[in-house]
Structure formats: C-alpha cells, structure tokens
Amino acid sequence: MLILTCPYCGVAADETELAPGGEAHLTREGPGSDDDAFAGYLFHRENPKGVHFERWRHAMGCGKWFHAARCTVTLEVFGTYAAQVTEPPRAIRDAVSARRPGWRWRDLT
Ligand SMILES: [Zn+2]
Image (cartoon, rainbow, N blue to C red):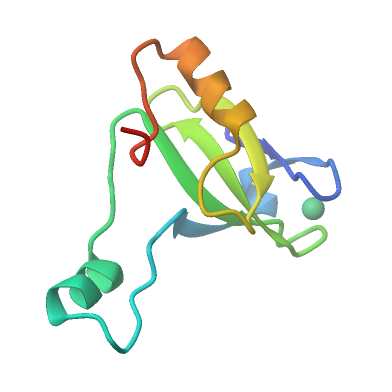
C-alpha cells in the first residue's frame, strides 16, 4: 500500500485518502506556443520504471495539492513537498540520489 505524508497537515495517509493528479512539474504551454509543444503538454507524460514525481491531493484530509517523489517499482517514497514549486527541492533530490546513485533531476545538466 502506498502511504504518503501530506506536507501541509503532516498526516501519513494511505492512497485511499488521496486523489492522484498525474505527473508533476509539467511545463505549461500557453496560447503563443506551437502545436507540437501544446500537444506535448496535453498528451505526453512520463511513465518511468523507477523514480517518478507526481501530484496528489489530500482529498480526505486538508484537501491541498502536493507533490511526491517515489519509485514506481518498489513504492519507496523519497519525500513529499508543496506543489507551488517548479522543480523538486534540493532535499528531495538529495534523498533520491542517496538511494539511487547516478540518478539526476532532468533539468540539471
Ligand atoms: Zn493534508
């Protein structure tokens, strides 16, 4: 069972108390974007076997959206954090790197 700790109210909630919101950290494309970029924003999603960043809502609790970093294979949770960020906080990236040597956040090159 997947258990995530809500970063707002601190409750360790199982997945029946949460609502999934899909992939986190999407780049939103606006009216000025080209068709390919907008189609990518609407339809293309990562589906990794391993580390993944997701949006979740604490539906049966405080109702707020947050992000979670977890492994899709083992359900290991690396951490949860507020949704109002454009990339995972350093502490979350460090937690993932400590458990998955060689892993890098996609935007850090
Ligand atoms: Zn909450």
